[in-house]
Every structure is written in structure tokens, then in C-alpha cells.
Amino acid sequence: MTPFSLPPGNSQIKCVHSFDELVSTRFADGVNALCWQRTLPGDFGEIVQLLGSSGDSSEAITTLDEARLRRLPVSAEGRRAIDQLLADLELLRNHDLDPALNFISGYPRDDEPGPIPTDVFSFHADSAPVEADTFLCTYHGPTSEGVRNDEAQRRVDIPETRSELLKIFGGADNDDFREYLKENCYDLHYAAVSQARPFSFGLGNLWRIAIDYPGSPVPPCIHRAPATLPGQARLLLIS
Ligand SMILES: [Fe+2]
Image 1 (cartoon, rainbow, N blue to C red):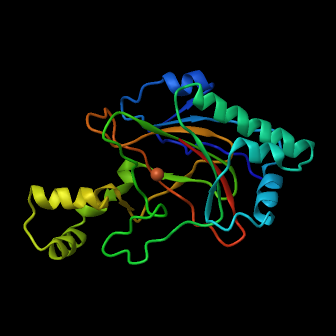
Image 2: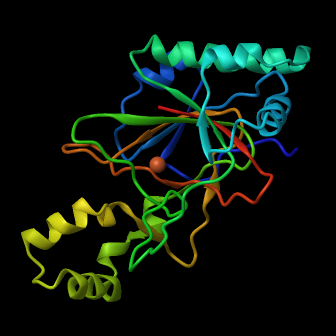
Image 3: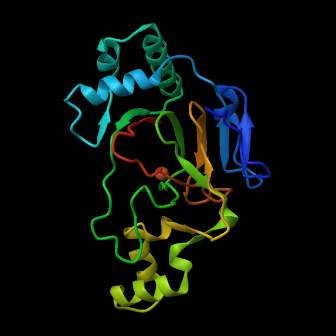
């Protein structure tokens, strides 16, 4: 496996060296993603394999509880991976967060995407009505991806898409229309420009990314879930 490296020349990403630094660094001056780069011990693939073959994970996304993790019949390397997962959950919980560990064997796609796809495969910003941010770590499988803000455009700002949305809305480009865009999350989805170079979040790294909320000092970090083929399950921590 090639070692992970941060995309060169990307001033939106700041590398940090500890969990304390990850949670205490303020988003400012255009920095909207913090990466605590880690090479984790343990065999996460073994856990994914066990979960995939256990037969009770028919759901596309299963949230794993600690009891289930502890019960898995694993090797010493698998045990190290489980210890790491439990340690990360505890770190985030001790910081008053509510992390979830997800085993993902597929994602729901938009059945009828309409003018703007709004599933997690589409570049998007997370949002909240109050100050918040998103923590992400992929332990196994295809990794989350990001794109620089100057290499993406809000889909609702693309003239053809906007007029198509206006047609569907059946009204004028006014506050009601903007409310309609918000309600449908259309305003949170982005198209990468043709020259864009999306970057990988890598495996094992714990990221804290800025989201869209009123008064945020920086633009939100634009990201997406990777395309996952059958048999390419992911193990992801999200908070
Ligand atoms: Fe997201």
C-alpha cells in the first residue's frame, strides 16, 4: 500500500499531531479541514471480513456497538484493530461527541436524482443549524474524498441547473425558492470543475472538517463517499 500523503499545495488542509490539537484548532484563514495523520496498528480487514460473513449484516449500513465488536472471534492483529476502534470511540465520547462506527456494504442512492443528486456520492457540505463539525475516519475500504472549494461549484449556482430547478419549483428566484433549495438540500451539493483534483482522506487518519452553519468563519469542507463496488465494504467512524 502506498503511504498516504496530503495533497500538495492545498492550503485548506492543516495537519495536526494529536487529538488535542485536532479538537482545539480553530477553523480560520480558509483552513476548513484538519487531518491527524495516523498509521494504525491491527488488521481492520479481518474485522470487515468477519462482519461481512456473519450473515446478520443484510443492511447496507450497520452501526456497530461495542459489545458486538468485543465478541468477534479475531486473531491478535484483529484484536489490536478492535482496541483501536474502541479507543477512538472513547476519545470522541470523552469530548462530548456522539460517534458512530459504521460497517458499510452499500449506500442508498437517489432513486430519482432529479436535477441534483443528493446522496453521499455527490460532493457535498454537511450542515447544521448551530456550530458543529464532522469527524471522519476510514479504517478499511475505499476512503472518503475531498475537493478544494476553488475546484467546485455549488450546483444551484450553475445557470442551467438553476433554471431547471426554477421550472420544477414553478416560481420566481426569490426567498421562497431559496427556502425550497434548502429544504431539499440542493444548496449543499457541488459539482467539481473539470480540472479538479479530488483528494483521498486516506486510511486511519482522523479528520475534523468544517460544515455549513450560520456564522461559520470558513467555507465548509466539500467531500463525498467513495464509489464502492460489491465486496468493497468500508469501516468508517463518523461523528
Ligand atoms: Fe458528509
